[in-house]
Amino acid sequence: MSLKQTPLDPSKIVVDSKEYSKYIQTSLKLSTKLTFDFPKLCVRLKPYSSSDANKLATEIKKRNVFARHSWENSFYVNRATELSNRTVIEVYRRGQPDEIIDESQKVASIFENVSILSSILVIKRGKYQKLMGIHQKLGTDFYLIIGKDFRFLRSKSEPVPIVSGISIDKRFMKRFRRCGFDDLITFCLANYKLSRRLLSTINWLIESREEPLLSAAIVKTSIALESLLVFNKSEPLSKSLSERSAFLLSPEASTRKKISKLIKHFYTERSKVVHGSNASVPLYIVESVDRLIVLLCLVIATNRNNFHTKENIQNWCEDIKWGHHQYDIYKPFSDLYLKNALKLFVNK
Image (cartoon, rainbow, N blue to C red; front, side):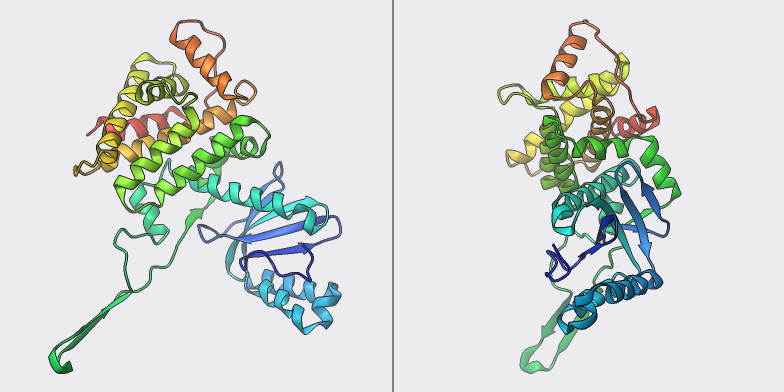
């Protein structure tokens, strides 16, 4: 894409530089006041101030002949100024803009989604949906009542929610790096067959988090888990998923038992939903399983040298099941995250 072409999306702008092309994408779902660099990914998350936006607009106008002389290309100058006071994801790649845009969009999308994914460990579903301006009750922003002969009128309006986004601060970034979320991004961008499974899992889990109807959310969470750990269409879901989740997340028998019990209970609730039960879905069980799925993604990504394919995971779990110990797997996160996920279930 060159500066003479219309961007693929109004929220995105591509700018060419001397050595790198820089892809800039705004993010409504993330909010930061600090700049964070990810050198391995050539990615930067930063707040764009008015000064930054004006500087970029000036550079575009100064250094690009079309933006400087053609009234049509003032669009790009205006687009740059609209970055003011926004959180942006910058992706740097060697090559011309039209050569790097597809990859850059993928990188920015995965980075944003994994950042959202990492928040699941500490932000509950209700708070997350509030930050995203998501409400279960959908409808217009106001109502109007008209009485007989228009003698009685009444109206009430509700303010449209402002999307706050997930706050990216030093504490967030410390957890992000310590728990291995940057490794998860790297794994998702790799050419492993398992990378596609992880991407599918992440997308379904975010769909679940943003689903205001809890009965629909439990189905989406189940699809996220199945996308990750179901390897044969004919295998029993509850049994296979409970075993594999337990083996991958803990070496301790007592903890594995709790994990297995949680997954089985989750699938009991899921069955009620898909078979038309009117029983309400317990929020805590979806919340617990959401967190377990995040931890499973981290385990698989961190142990990518051993887990290239679904067969690697399947064989490892089978060996553990039958007492044939091959090798230990590394958990990048503190046991506290697993304990907190289970506590949401155990305490009910």
